[in-house]
Image 1 (tube, rainbow over the protein chains, first blue to last red):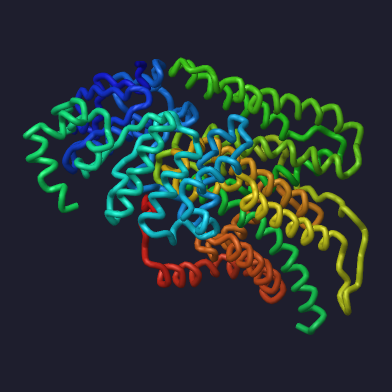
Image 2 (image 1 turned 90 degrees about the vertical axis):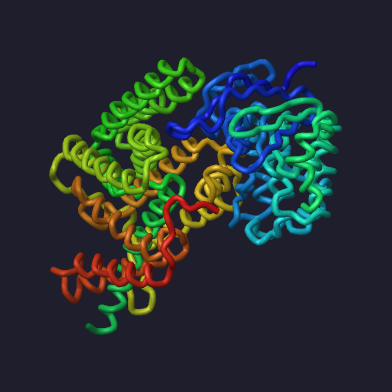
Length: 242
Length: 347
């Protein structure tokens, strides 16, 4: 199986403080890979580096092509998409416009099927269709997450990166989001999922990494990690209450 | 002051106010997209007006040289970056925008100028010569500073203003120009005699503002500009290049500046440094709109036009003082009304 994304010796520093140290990570094609770890371990930094939002040292290969030099916008055009933790929606613009802009990279490459694409997103998130003319800033937390996800899907990503998609959401909506993530995998989208909700993440993932203090502390098939006593004690013991 | 004079002043104020409104919107657009308080906007007004004046003399305007030189510099800057990063893909677009387009426009001006083409062709040519200067100035002065603070960008804008002012003096000379009115048409509305030129200015401004609104609300590129202004990170994540948005915003601001210049040149004598004061009045309108609201900026600019018109009648020596003093109560009112937000605040 070929790797969708492969990072080697990835390092990010804020000034002299190294936030990521020699991280190696692989996302095989068509799989869900999760990165779990405590707050401040560098999970968001890792995604920002993979997306080109932060300058990084080391190697990043996407479908075998080195992308470490490419700006964010070109990585988007190649098929990487990030749903950031802060969602980064266009608050004073309508849901429909937010989605349309999600397809901007493809529009610039000549695609003119944005309306059809948007109809598909509405099919997946009927709630967004009800809210189509509403401003993004007025949506509830769950709707905002759906919009962020829908906007990322408009780019037609081959690799979707999700940063804490369950953060601040009610359990019922978390379940729905995770169901959608699994549905995307069935469509052939490779997924890199960063989560604090380790239990839910390991349930849907094929493979997992544990990031601690900016380094990969542990990795393995998701099923094995879920059985690992150290993981159970540190990350799964409390997850029940989430 | 009697009623007739008041009507005349109102007419005058609305004509100038409509032009200030165009400039206010352009300033706001550039600020929202690139965070640049573009002080040099007035130079585009001057270049538009003077290019038209020179074309009407049957000569090739100095704007051509400006375009060729600055375009060449912009291409060299892109070449240097491509050399350093070993990425050559963007260079073809840069060559088209910074070399081919100026050469094409220069050739057109060289060929058409002595033929004294009809006014409409002269106007289009004069504006077309100025518009590429927008993205070129952005490339040279602001693109390398994408992450600088608003204050640094403001200083650079002031420097760009002085540079373009000097170049304007070099290429157009120190004498003032005034182009003949576009039309000798006059119409009486009640007791008032309205000139065709006034109607043309007001009508063109209204149409341009409408087009800008449609562009923002109906086209994906327009929405992309708004998105960049609202959330830079979000915009990058959907593939909108900050530089592309900046280029487009600067092209639009140059277009609006040049059109204002062309429209105002039959009304006011334009010297190489006149544009600055005109754009500054647009800026007062933008400030009334608190650097965020397009409709309030346009209305504010209209108000500035009216205030200026009445001030020049009542106390002509103090008219600029009165207009710019308006900034003080406006800023006081604005800063009391809104809580202070940091420039880097997001969401």
